[in-house]
Image (cartoon, rainbow, N blue to C red; front, side, top):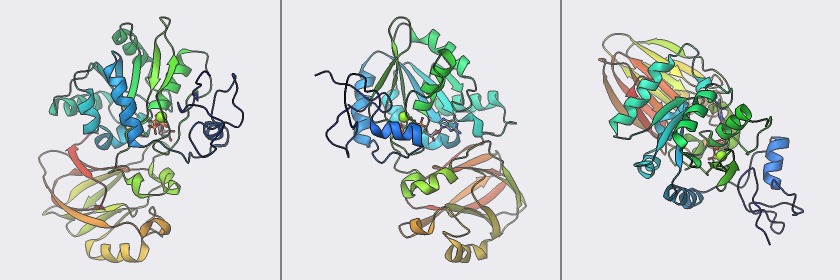
Length: 365
Ligand SMILES: Nc1nc2c(ncn2[C@@H]2O[C@H](COP(=O)(O)OP(=O)(O)OP(=O)(O)O)[C@@H](O)[C@H]2O)c(=O)[nH]1
Ligand SMILES: [Mg+2]
């Protein structure tokens, strides 16, 4: 029998096990999408079966052995956690185009050339050579033509592989490329807010020479805040449109709470500026540092939401002290839900969910 794969997630179609990947009630020669993908596409249902990192490893190692052009997709809103070391180590010595997706969530006023320079600097710092850097929005279709042109030039008769962490928008990017360059109007590959939507390699013939776009499962980042929360909170954390930065003039003894996902407490000799870049659905709150512990004790899961009351029981927080010398504007990146720009000299106590990470960079904006 010919093995048929679901066009939405790449799983092998089967009509025997409803709880397993690739299930379709009636399997025949016309079958295209499994029940899971059909329900995601037509009823906006979230997938219950998701890829595991073993699926990612299995596919990516296979893909990397082949002689293809690699499009390494990162999420610009979660740059530090999706510019992932494990991914990078696998991609060294390959032909790589770095694509920073989700540009639509950045403030319209942000300077795209400066961001490209910033990205190339981040690559240089770790000696990661890329052939080109592109900033795009798969959702809005921004700069997809420019990326198409670069792929055409760099491909040299090869297939094009889309790789990266889960949820960065690899499948959305292929859908956007198909919509921009063919008569396709609707999404071809399944996408969702749940990390692990794509289950296996998906080959989409695209080029006249028979070569294809190839989607892959993403590496699930264990340090991402999503791993600590339930799907109800995901949509609040991911910006659904342009971020509206919130600027504070901060003096010593002030704190800023980022919903219930973390907080920053400041000690500084003179006032500093602090700019929070996150989803506008997150409740950002300034208070006196001496009140922060009570705020978390009394309002976590309520005013400070996410996390929801259902999620808080399994969460614990840790404090980390970071000193800023004030010579350069810096960003503190929280894995999964945004970043905070610090302008000035300060000692900052960062409260974060224990399993998640924070990263410091020069300011991106
Ligand atoms: N704002 C915004 N959201 C996007 C963009 N591209 C993708 N998304 C959203 O990001 C989430 C993940 O998108 P996917 O395309 O499923 O990501 P993926 O990298 O294929 O994820 P896996 O298959 O899990 O590895 C979905 O909720 C998308 O709607 C974008 O350009 N802007
Ligand atoms: Mg995908």
